[in-house]
Image (cartoon, rainbow, N blue to C red; front, side, top):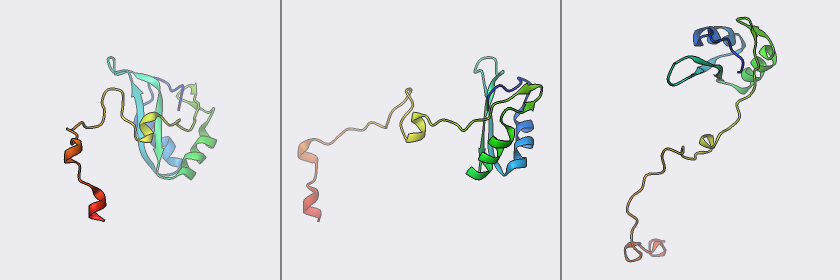
Length: 107
């Protein structure tokens, strides 16, 4: 959801958007330093049907004096099981060729 009023809080969004079904989570994205809303949020429903109903019902509607845009979230690399840039998979010592067991022997 885009173009939120900076005064809109998560409890307000949960109250309004729960009219379309069970809301699992509401997250307003905030500036890390100022903790002020960046004007957009994510709302997760427990069912896709409820999410689509909310999208159809609330897109381009007024909320706290602003016309909001409601869209489906676009997947990111993180959503596909990749690691964020700041970290990686756990690294352990790999066995040398002499230490690797022959798996065919176990079949």
